[in-house]
Length: 319
Ligand code: ACO
Image 1 (cartoon, rainbow, N blue to C red):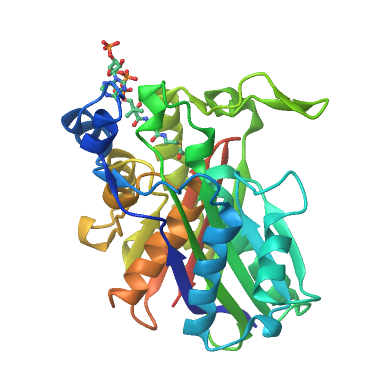
Image 2 (cartoon, protein in one colour):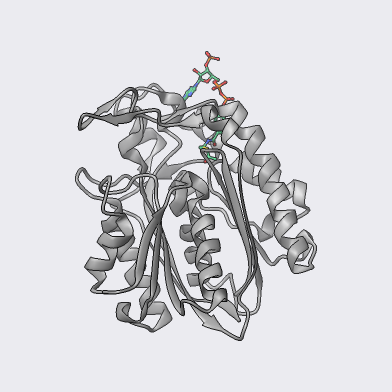
């Protein structure tokens, strides 16, 4: 029994915001610095009041349309997000209600930029166990809400968006292997250290990052976990048809591809147009490459993410 991917969808809010647009808004930065260090040319930023559940809902509807099933056919809904609408209920429950599904298990996963790969691995295990038949897995973020727009070292890197996939129990492949890991001792190099106390956010509610430490950690674990899922599935990393790494920074993506011996032409890149959309980055890139016809049925696709915690996860699937 496999968990087979039968639909993908995504959604980006509004219109692209370029690096020059950010400079024009008063951020002390420039297009050349951002492109050279990160590869990012533009990102999408949700309008005030727009929530992760709104972005995730549209991505989910598009994935369900491609899958050719209705929301009432789902028995599992998992949303990966670090920018939920509320403390609770979960964003998954809010999307479930908007979709008109009742009865499916619905919950959020919080593993920051690795969140989608964690959620995918969890859904795969539910389906492989036989307990659930049709899962909706969403990555949805409004990261712009947790950025310090006065910190030019971080605010230029991120964007908002959502991506989703529908999985179905099938005797055809299918997700071949998954892996998830974390190292909580690295919690200080990327975090949002605010707390809720007495109904108020106390401390610092914005994203803080040691960019160089994150860079080194990300390249190492993205290479390691890609090797791991390939080894479990009994293939070499060079045999994958498509590599979809977390879209944080073109230099991390290129260094990872090089370490794995995966040709640049097989690496899906959207970071130039989306920025880092955290848990949404991998399903956004996957949906783009499925819809433009690059990813074909029967091909091997390796998706992988890394994020605050630190957390990292991967899945190797035959599309
Ligand atoms: N525009 C112009 N100048 C800037 C900007 C900016 N947006 N941001 C920083 N600078 C300046 C700094 O002030 C500094 O100036 P100084 O030398 O006069 O002090 C100079 O640029 C160099 O700053 P560094 O922080 O040392 O730059 P670095 O080369 O490390 O690049 C970057 C920063 C791009 C963040 C890099 O460390 C990186 O790519 N790290 C990976 C982190 C990442 O991608 N995180 C995403 C989230 S994590 C995840 O998704 C897993």
